[in-house]
Length: 335
Image (cartoon, rainbow, N blue to C red):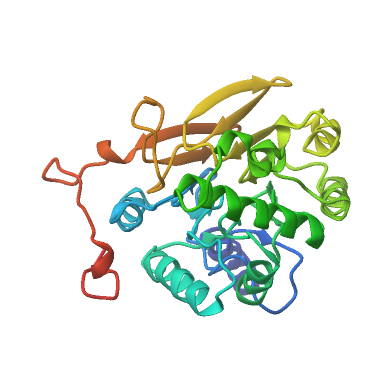
């Protein structure tokens, strides 16, 4: 009688002393196969909270060595993953060879990140139907969602127009650039492109709205919702922007990030944080004190703790910014 009893007690002790198995972070999406807008789904194991980072615009005349430096700085900061708000290449062309070259440059530098990176398109990335198809062949969906540790991320396409309207905007933009560059006569502020609401505010199709409505209905009990977009769709006043989703978001906690303006700002709208990011290598207005290169860190605990880090203040152990040159990203230097 003693032996079975002793074995039973020993088994209980052994079971109670087992180290709990490490749990893989929960990452959900609805893309079963094919290309994806993210480059990896291997996340490091986390504590109860996690941190992600956001980069902003590179374009409008990308300044050299800024984004490559940001990649190195992000590796120092070690977020779980990195998100973007679009304008990752100069684009604005129908030359697929040029597009391939520009995306290889961006993705080559991005490949040095030690964590997953999520692409999002801006007006420079999705200027015309050729670029839209190029994106879809390379990255898959232009708008999508994912859930990480019960936090919902909505990645919106703010260049989501009917193809005919996209071409009208593209052609008007090309003419406006000719005026700006002095190639043809005219006044930019009087151009058709300048007067188009899409220039500043973007647009989203009914299909995209329906997609995100279904996502919000499916994930009604998440801890927090983040919306990322390039242009500030929430500034529309004609029922063509984010207000169609804001009504569904009203009773849940959420935060909005966008780029495009190249100037950092924060405001409360509908009681929520709406944040326009600065740049991560894009062109800047030297007279704008809020036009600075930055990366944003969001630590997601019970609610997000948002920290905006000016790249000029992210220093290495010598007290200096460790500048990484674009020409060195092809494996010649460890980030």
